[in-house]
Length: 253
Ligand code: ARG
Image 1 (cartoon, protein in one colour):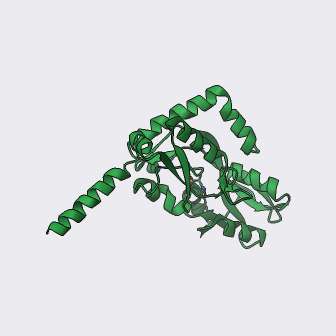
Image 2 (cartoon, helix red, strand yellow):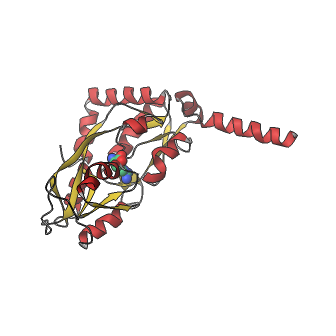
Image 3 (cartoon, rainbow, N blue to C red):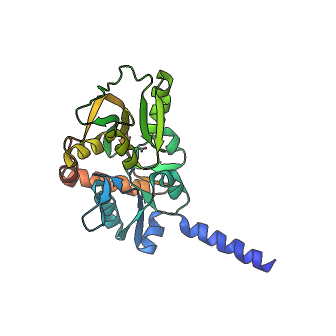
């Protein structure tokens, strides 16, 4: 009896200390960022293995404004959104996360910080002459699990007769594009532009964009960190630092 009470209060304490609020983060002295670092130029491993990118610099600016240090915790995208955020395993997530009404039901987003789109990636030279919105009937189209690319493919491409192949790992999808095993892979526009820069000739965008979207920073539902993030974004924009970060990391725009 006593023991279960102890366990219960321990659990309660744990859940209280998990609440990622401005005060809580300041008290711990650290802001824990969850991110899936396979998404250049937003988050990816640098030469020394450290995670870097546009999102990381923005999160660091938020940590700086809060007077704490930033800790970057790699989490696969499928686990990150939204479980790692809602469970309090991380204080926030930045991972090129698209703001959607469904996600906004379970997490609190900052205002939009980057305009993006879902686009089709094919092998360099587009040997299959893939086009969208031309006919995708009978084509196999790859998507990354749990992404807006998967949601859009299910809503828009499946009804038109495409077969959707789901990858946990984006790199595995790219390998299948390169080997000609799938007609196209859906990905985020700025990451495709980055791929084209890093691996010239191997991949290209084909067809029109599937859907336009905005990225946001994700926090526990109702956390005052979202408002703090908006203040940091406004500061970065007003000072010109935001534009500098765009120039530093993002090839298109
Ligand atoms: N923007 C898309 C989404 O929110 C894909 C993001 C994937 N990010 C990543 N780091 N793998 O669903």
